Length: 190
Image 1 (spheres, rainbow, N blue to C red):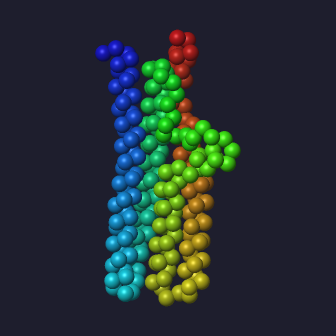
Image 2: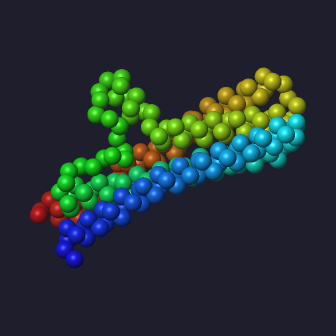
Image 3: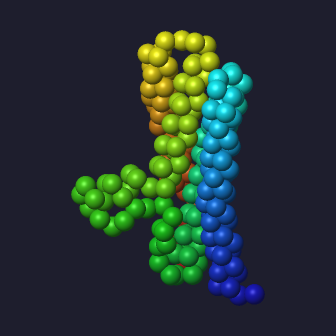
């Protein structure tokens, strides 16, 4: 097999793996939405809230948030390797379909870059964590203002956590060197 053929095969595998990560995230979210709806339906059907239902929902929301992050990091890595193979080995130019927003500048460009599918997943899971935490507080027969404070406090706390911890790891995955230094020097010499 020629070098170009093997590079093309490797590109295809990495590209398909990146797509697999996208699909896994989507199906995980779909399944969790169905489970969340079933939990809310059981709560409505029973007419009262028992602590174990929102606890289970909260645990699933945490699982979804962290699984979403892990799948995003893998997605970034696979798509960056595919883009590098396409650019360096196949000479077909830079392929950034996965990572960057549109080519617009100004407010429209900022909106396209900010509001991605990933941001929608993160927002969904952050609201799910806050909502299940507030529902869990409701099981203790606490005043309505405490439930509202719990919702917004949890939402703010985990948004800051995501921004400070998880988002930085995702940014790190986007900026890590793909080629080792030795391999990069060899490429420059060619």
